Image (cartoon, rainbow, N blue to C red; front, side, top):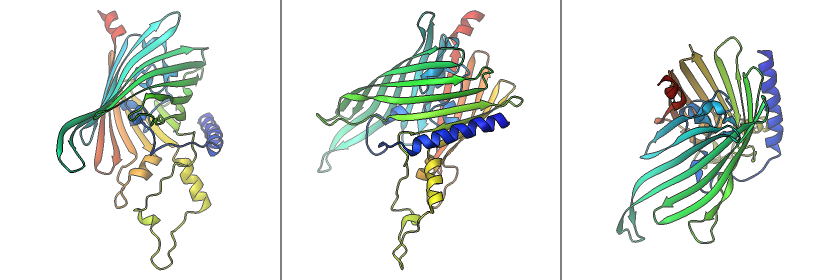
Length: 354
């Protein structure tokens, strides 16, 4: 347990120093936001939008290509997310290994925002219209040594919002360190580095949802329990959002002053907005129980009158022969759950049995 604490503490301190000096713009501006969503039920179950777990799970590679390896050869995965309001998204992925160049994972990521009723400025109905976005990804991964691996995803992106269309390209680059006993993994990832090739409106280009991330996972030696820690949005320190409707931000009617947090509380709040925590308990190598906590999500989406389980996620995974089924129920806002379902199958194992 001591070496786990040492690794986690060192990792957290180094990463904190990094994000304190980083700056960039996120949320509120940009396009193709669906590229940063959690698609895999396992990833969502541990609270984040990527993982640093090296156990040959092809569903993790769309977010972390440095995990791609030959053991995923001929693995197929499908993932579906049911979002309130009729919005659905997910992906389909297939991996194949080429001995001389490495393993590749091809995937199609999508989001369907449903059907909308259009109207002009005067309120006259103009008919129904649709909104959907797609990303065709080609991922590649290769081990540089038994301890280090690298990977990259190339993306072609298409978006259609009513009569407006946009095309873009992007890449993810990642590197991972894996301990000799395969119990510890750390990954550094730069996601969605790219640009719009064709904007929705002529000359009005928007940035992509770039994100710099670090993740680690540690599996205990004598207990089938794995802890996951993610640091997100390292390119920007201040992720706080000022909500004028929050009672805590409303000025006192007598003094006219707004209650301010102490300096320590501000630093702690700012730091925790980058941190996602998760734990996964495996029972008899067949059943996995998962729980995750996303502090930033809880602070931004909780109701002022009721926080509930906002920011918490819970899920389970079941492995039966060559099949792997995962389910997660995420509470993004109190009373409005999201359901994630992911199915992966090893066609290689199926062929062997045949």
